[in-house]
Length: 392
Image (cartoon, rainbow, N blue to C red):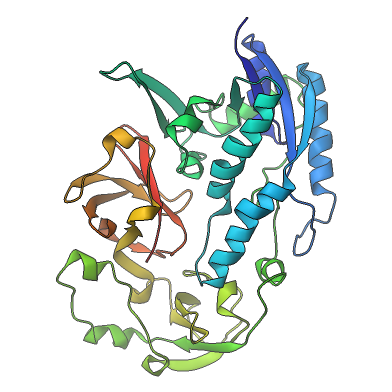
């Protein structure tokens, strides 16, 4: 008897085709749909979105010919993902709930539920690849690589997985491109073949973020201060990596007040929409925020120098090595490719491990380095080997 595989069926086309391919390959497959969210405050599609997804998922399971199960993980999702989101936004940082959802839910709480039903592996519809090798001690080492489709590679969302989690993971569509996935779904007559891809927060859906966050974070009006380009003429070039990784710290007196905002926690670095401030030839972008003073700093134009940085820092306790065998020692460095947000093209950079953390120095200045987001680094062959939360 072969391994028993649980496919996390969401009602979307990707997981549907993953289920179909596993069944075609002769595996013992069953579907498990999880509900992670009940509240509708701040969501833009009404209250029945998850019910529609469940209905489609059930129809897909029936079409593929596999058993269908349901689990409600909303309590653990709120504690491990949503509460973390609120906490990070309250600090003026911008979290990535999708990365947390994979680490804390899909390949942890969900995996545990799947194992209760007899699963040996959990499969998902992620566009990424996994392989393994045996090291000199006879231990199996698992690798996670970019998906074959350069437009849909989702390895970044899995940047916090451990070796133990990867051991139990399967990604059946990682070597297939999205148009081909759609074609397979249509040819197989899957009910999700033409379903649009989901958007917004993982399992919550597309939200009006300020309204969503106002459930816990109360609005507090503050100033929007514009920093002129001339400000940067007086900045002395940093002479050490630590200083290069320091963001510019602004004071309200460095610019002029051009508007009001409803609370620092509702805005993120690099954001353009939602400021509602006119009178400028080019759009205003958020370049920094100050939670203590409740001040947002903006700059005019997408090439404003305040939007760009050469380096960032990750605290030691926030560094995660997917491949612990490749961990940099203190004093070590590594040339690699890095992305600091989903779908960003990989950037040439060098990692430096120091006593107080990991520093990433980019070959070219990076736009919108955002504390709270994840930086993930890749080897030349497309293997993602580690990641960490951007501290500053």
